[in-house]
Length: 124
Image (tube, rainbow, N blue to C red; front, side, top):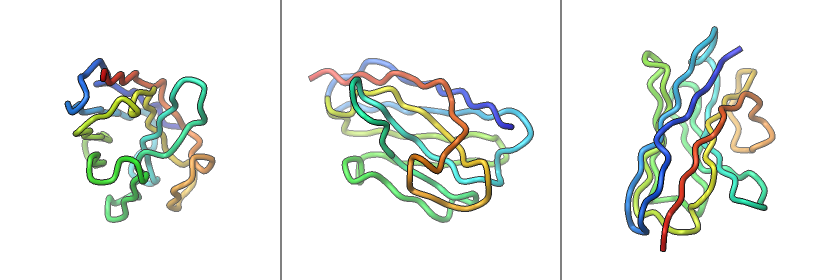
């Protein structure tokens, strides 16, 4: 019911920064919780950050706390992830996603609408 497209990935040196964006189209955006997730080669998809419908509730994965910032703009239908102090272990495909029903969750399995992903590579 909503289509998501990520952008902003690329190659960066350790200690550098990137800003990812996710734009939404279709019938629904502001009603639902959203999040950024990542999947490194050969590993399970994991939570990077989640945000509720209004932006008032935010949670970060332990490995990115203090370095990454998630935000949403419901009028622009945009979700962003500012990534600072990047480390080689941040290398992964990054996805944005939404829930399909009202309610907030920090669990990967509760998110059901996914973008195509954008590659982030951090060189040591």
